[in-house]
Amino acid sequence: MHVPQEFPKWKYHRELPARIVDNAEQEAALGNGWADTPAAFAEPAVEAAAETQTAPETQAQAVEESKPAKQPKAPKQPKQAKS
Image (spheres, rainbow, N blue to C red):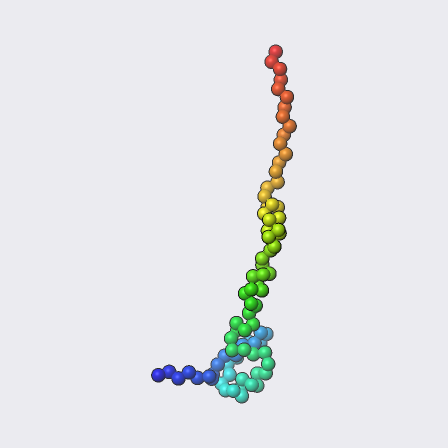
């Protein structure tokens, strides 16, 4: 039967390289800013998605701006009378 062990384990920091600690003393010596998973430093998906979305009126404007410009119709030529 496998007995889970707390150490050794990886510790992650936002700016420093990941490290392996072998005991609680080494973990405490790291100080603040360390986590058990790199996901602790990822941006929340909700905020990241909100930054990439645009307002509906901006989306509609972007669609209109992406359409090719309408060319003005040439004026009709008068019909020539038959002689």
